[in-house]
Image (cartoon, rainbow, N blue to C red; front, side):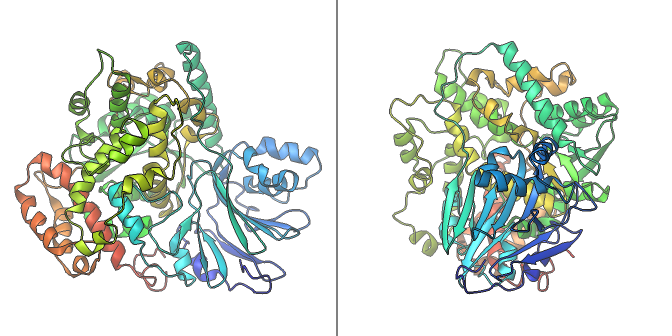
Length: 636
């Protein structure tokens, strides 16, 4: 969009071409009669395979939109709109946006249920609206460059249109300690629209407006457990049913955990035959969930694809995964997710249900269990050491080990420190030891944890601490940027696969998030209400399984493989020496120690070295590398 009313915009074809992996089934564009606005769309056809092309207009062509994602329950909304006179030209779910906007304006967002990002042009009022769903499941970034506003699903499309691809040193610094700001990306010239917000542009003025957030003010009162379990099952079951609606087959990402097991079991209640399941299998038994996943599929008589991963194929695709992610990763699981979605596409499927979001709204991770016991301080409570002994694979990344960076700002603000922030602070100490002194000197006076907390003015007089505050901070940072953004959306869409998240349905997530802590955690097990809701449906093994984070095994072991070689070679080589964020000599000293490291040390240093490798690759990518004409990493 040209911010000057007399200016025009260039063709977006080259930017759209960079996003072909997100929509390989057609690319179309529309330019407004005044030439100020161009909307472009690459299509992944799931609903209305015949007439659902975009951009799409309303009846008199005064409002145009492009939509990424899905609107659930659209049939009922469409029927209501038709009853009051609206005329539809397609059978697509996306078209309801236009007619809701005609009647409700930007308040239309409160009628939308789904994973979505959209850009809408209101020609009569000369307004542009760019909106992201409540949780930020679908990405939406933007840049102001050369007098124009560019908006896209991924930053690489903006680089193809001329926006500089310079990395943002402050975002890197914040990430190394905790997380970048909610509206920041890893690129200096690119911002993102935060979840539950929309960008409103009129007469060259750009405003960012919030329309939804978690409720932290209501007090979670004691509730009847049986009633809650029944209500939660009903809400989740309906969310699963809505996400099974498609004009193409729908599969399921399945692990041995209760999240995806529940999704799979409930999906089986709504289909004539079990959906096809897809599971990652690691070559380390401590991280492998193959047995439980295959047992569940067998229990329901369903088919399951097993994607076997080792340190060799993680090495083969790590650079590609970082190119798609547009941010660092701390673990080879990002390649596992990339190859898992590729298998989905190889099976000629492009929609899957996911268990993502259950840990965020039901306090599923081990660090939440630790917080639960810390906040209660009851005689039967569990110490961090006890939680760590039960959740061993969470040590380091989710449960703190070792010396921590200064997190006194968190303690002063909240009166307690969420365990996941302690874990990030311990990892930050190790990361800082590998950082270039000149880079760190730029932020010598910064308190990264105060900067982080200043994004979220949560603390109020007489506030009663509970798990929601720890969850909120996680959801607005690690979950938003990495889990939903890099790990989920970008790894799935790298292979033209759409993942659907029933736990983030607007009838499920706020309800679960607001439940009392003791309906989420019992002793050292989390997601209690979910387990009880599907207890009658899933085998006892799946019901009782402890939470196991989806991590690839750390470096080392009996078969170190090519990923260790990739780390050693790259971080000693010219690419790492050219990375302004890393200290080559400190890297060399640490890499020299890797062969002699204990299993515990490898668990702690593997994510640190993996982040260093990610930063090396990100620093080496130029705008040309992100383009489809200049990069061997761009899908064709």
